[in-house]
Image 1 (tube, helix red, strand yellow):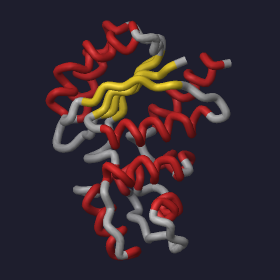
Image 2: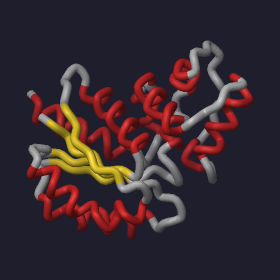
Image 3: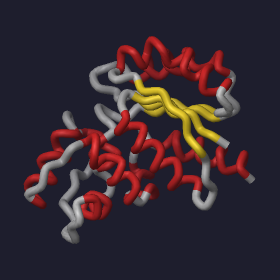
Length: 188
């Protein structure tokens, strides 16, 4: 089985892929994807992309769009409506608060591991309350490890090392747990 992924950029695809694989272990799936290279194109094209993914053999579709400064209910409604005509067997719209990097800030061990370090950094109590999670992660890496953080390189590595159960505290990630349960049932 293949899962269709739609996201703003390649690093978001990498994060989604790793989190999805972690949530459905020991099952494995393939992935097909579309990248918006920004949120505007993603919003305009996600409906057509979802249809394309379903036609290419992806009965399940995941879409992720950073909240940034948008109204969450309105954005969710727009994206859900856009992908509904694709008639995927299962789909989920994920909207990280501000940026997807907030999800990565739930697991200090994964951050340390991604940079080959042992020292776990001190994390914010509520990563989703940060105004700029990407900058916070960059500063945290620089301060703790004196290394350069590149979201395009490090985000998927952090996600691969992450313990997804730590994301249970993330309201914006919660729908992915339900989607993963559905996906696991389809794989049985």
